[in-house]
Image 1 (cartoon, rainbow, N blue to C red):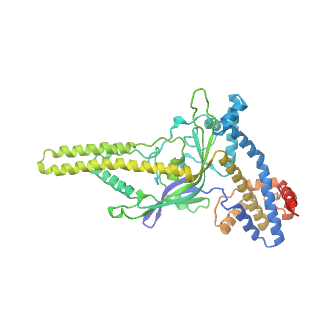
Image 2 (cartoon, one colour):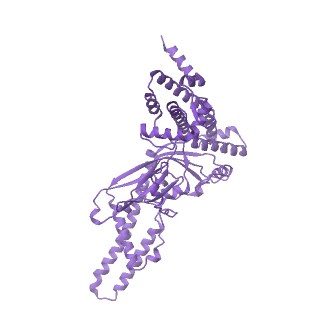
Image 3 (tube, rainbow, N blue to C red):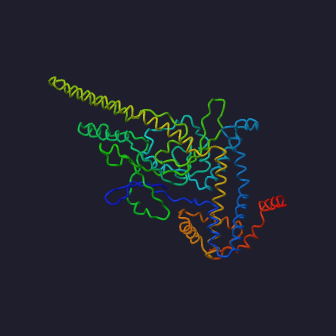
Length: 496
C-alpha cells in the first residue's frame, strides 16, 4: 500500500511516498547462483550445488510449461493482430468464446501474481497522481471507447479487495519502484508559477478568492491527506520511502528564473495495462485483448500509459483565468473613466497586463500540449517494452526466474544455517540479499517452501522446522532432467 506525507528534516519539510516493499528478488539469477556458490568452502560441494541449481531450474520450467502453453494458445484467439481470423476459423459459439476469454484472464492474472505484479489500488493511483512532474495537462480516458464487460465479468467471478474505480474498463499492474530526475531551467514553468502566485494575490485583495476558491484540479480526485504519523515509521523493514521534489514546492523569485533546478519523482519500474476496446459496429464484437508493458513511468505522469486518452484541451481553470482577467480589466477600466485623461496611461497599462496574461495562458497551454505529445511519443518508443504476445512471453520467463531464485536462495540458507522455521528462513534470506547484494525485498518464504517440498529436497519436523537434504541426495531426488540428456547427446555428436 502506498502512502504520502511530509517528513520534517531540519527546518524544511520534504514530500515523500511510502511503498510496501515487494517480493521481487532484483538480483540476476547468474549472479545470485555464482555468488552463493563462491560462499561454499569445498569445491566438490560447489560443483554439486551448481548441478542442483541447473536441475531446479529445468524442473520448475517443466512444471510451468503446460500452463504457459495453455495461456499462449488461448491468447492466440484474442490477439488484436491475428486473433479475429483464428476465431473465425474455429467457428465457436459466442458463449464458448466468452468462456475461453475468461479462462485466459484466469491464466494471465495468475502469471501476474507469480511474477510479483500487483494491481494498482485506487489509493495508490490517487497518491501517484496527487503530484505534478513533466505532464501539465489534464488527461482523461474516453470511457465510451472501452469495453466494460470483459473485466467486469472476471472480477464478479474472482472478487478482490481495493480495486480501482475503473476496474471494469482497464486494469493497471505495477511492480518495482525507482526514481526519475530531471534537471532544467524550467523558465516557462517558473514564469507560470510566479504569475499564478501574483494572480492569487490579486484575487485576495479584490476579495474574489472566495468565489474562485474551488479550483478545478488536474486530477478528478482530491489530494491524499498528509499524515506525519507514518513517517516516524519510515524505517519499517517492509516499506521503502521515496522523495518527491516538485517545482511548485520550491521558493521562487524573479532572480532564480535563470537557475537550473532538479525535480524528482518516484517511478513505477514496470507497468502492464490490460484492456479491450469497444466494438466498432453493432454486428461485430471486438474480441482483441490488449496487454501493454511499460518501464520507468513517473508516478505523477502515469496518465501517459492509459488507454484511449482524450485529446487535452484548455482546463476549466484556464477558462476561469480568461474570464477573470477580462472582468478585472473591465472593472479597472470602468473605475478609471471618471478621472482625468492623465490616467489613460494607467488604463493602457491595465489593459496591456490583462491581454498579456490571456495571451500567456494560451501559449502556456500550447507549450504543455507539445510537451504532452513528446511524452506520449517517448512512452511509445522508449518506455513501452512490448505488447501482446511479447509481453506474455516475458512474463512467463520472469515467473520462472523468480521461482528459481527463491528456491535456490532458501535451499542455500538451510544448507548453511541448518534447521529453521519459516520466520527464521524468511529473515535469513532477506539478510543475505541485503549483505551480499545490497538489495532489499520482502522474501516470499511461503512460495519457496512450497516449491522445496514439492521437489522433495527438504523435510519438516514435528515443531515446524525445516531441514534440507544433502547436496548429493538432492541431486539424486530430482534426478537427471531431459535438458541434461539433450546436452549430453549434443556433446556426444560434437565430439570427434
